[in-house]
Image (cartoon, rainbow, N blue to C red; front, side, top):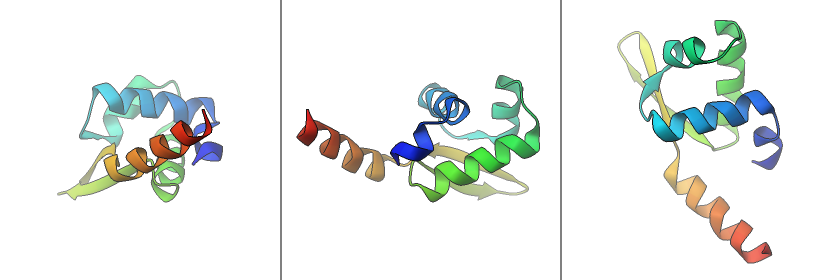
Length: 81
């Protein structure tokens, strides 16, 4: 999870999803100065690492933070500090 979040673009996606839960890929593409294909690659890494989940709605995928995994992550970080 830390490795995935270490990329500045992926960190920006996570910050965006905090304030825009349930957004689609196009919303993120509009927010970031990178191509749609690159955003999709970053979303895949975040999803595979457990930071986000995606729900397919018709032809779009709505992304949101994966609260279960984030709660787990917080507990591990809290144990360290």
